[in-house]
Every structure is written in structure tokens, then in C-alpha cells.
Image 1 (tube, rainbow, N blue to C red):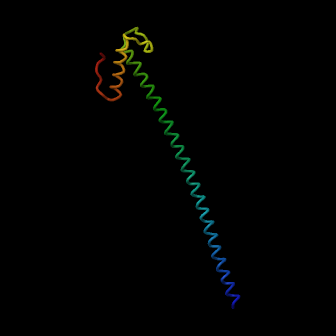
Image 2: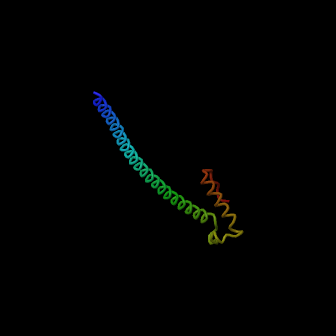
Image 3: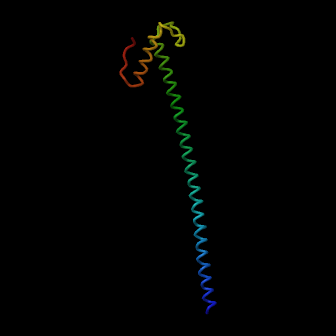
Length: 117
């Protein structure tokens, strides 16, 4: 009977060890699933971030284009016909340029605009 007891103890130990190994294998499989899910979520977040950056860049380029057009329009409106280009502005054109800048600032800040001075 002593041998049977030892065998049954060995069987119980083997069974417990097998349960531990099975649990470890299951845990490894779950970790791998989580790792895959995390990689998928990271890839999706990176794609979304790239999309946001691209959309922001397009909007910024559009805003710059609109602002450049408004500046050109304001300069054409405020500077006298045949006035030198903005890069050649001198004492005569400086007040008109200042007025154009003020007008653009008012528009950008949503303030009521005043008639050109």
C-alpha cells in the first residue's frame, strides 16, 4: 500500500504540475492576443494622427492662401494706383500699409472694421 500512496502522490504532483503548465501556456496565449490587439490599436492611432496632421496642414495652407489673398486685396485697396510694391514701401506708403495691417488685425479678431484712413 505504501507504493500506491507514493504513486498517487506522484500522480497528484504530476497533475498539479500539468495544470500549472497549462495555465502558463494559456497566459502566454492571452498575452500574445493582447500584444496583437495593442499593436493594432497603436497602428490605428498612428494612422489617425497622420490623418489629423495632413488635414491640419491642408487647412493651414488654405488659411495662408486666404490670408495672402486678403493682404494683397487690402494693399490694392489702400495703396494708391501705381504705388510701389510692398517691399519698396517708403515713407509715403507706410501709412497705407499700416492701415491695411490694422484692417486685417481687426478682421482677424472679429472687431468691427473702420473705413480706410
